[in-house]
Length: 171
Image (tube, rainbow, N blue to C red):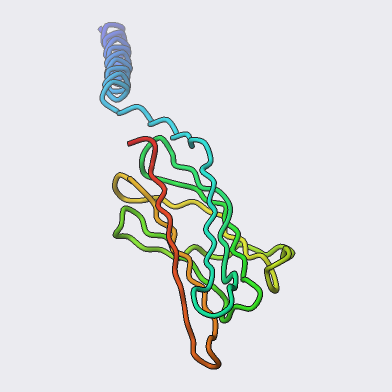
């Protein structure tokens, strides 16, 4: 009798292990079916050239600021990357600035990421802005606003802003 009892425990243990393995396989299979696939990383489209020059419109013609570089949209419609260079025009004051408007409502000011030697017509340095921006909804367009200032006549301060809008080619 004792032999049957031992055999019965072994059979019960083997059955329990088999059931546990079957349940684990079933759970793994369900998880694989029900879990969404990891989305592919969005790819960036071709770079769009950026070139915005702000000049004075009173007194002598002065190049106040120039923003050049590239931006590119991702095909997922939520991001864009930028590589921009801001020139502080000789004869303008104070230093120019720029900001970005996304979809005409969200505004952000990119952080300066470095400097380079100033080309002719620019003072001090060329200011570098490289980065990526992720928007919470569909990104339809980006508008860059560049502002420069000068004094004319005498101590009268003037400023001027130019903007260009870049459309997302993926929507």
